Length: 103
Image 1 (cartoon, helix red, strand yellow):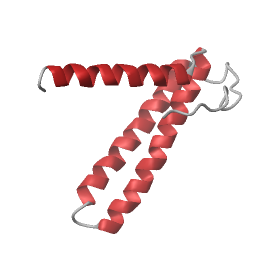
Image 2 (cartoon, rainbow, N blue to C red):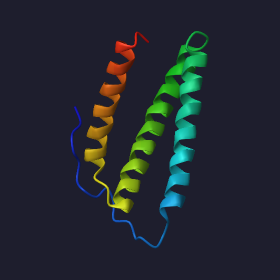
Image 3 (spheres, rainbow, N blue to C red):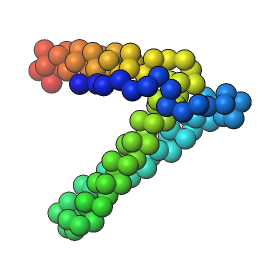
Image 4 (cartoon, rainbow, N blue to C red):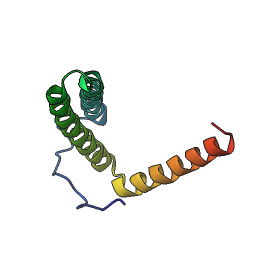
């Protein structure tokens, strides 16, 4: 279940960064998330302690990704929660299509 938060995460001066610069930060955060998820899997059987550390780092990276998405929506004037619900609906439709096709 998605729970809405306040409309504005932070007050962003529009002149400080462009949406493209914001997107660059988002891709950096996604890369950090991918790196840590890879390490979680890599160390899962070898070093449980190290795997747990990377799991925490992956959670932090995911929170950074979400924050960047909220900021991007804020910058563009998009309703983050509307888009999140739309994404859920689209994912359900895709899963149903794949099930119908036997995939």
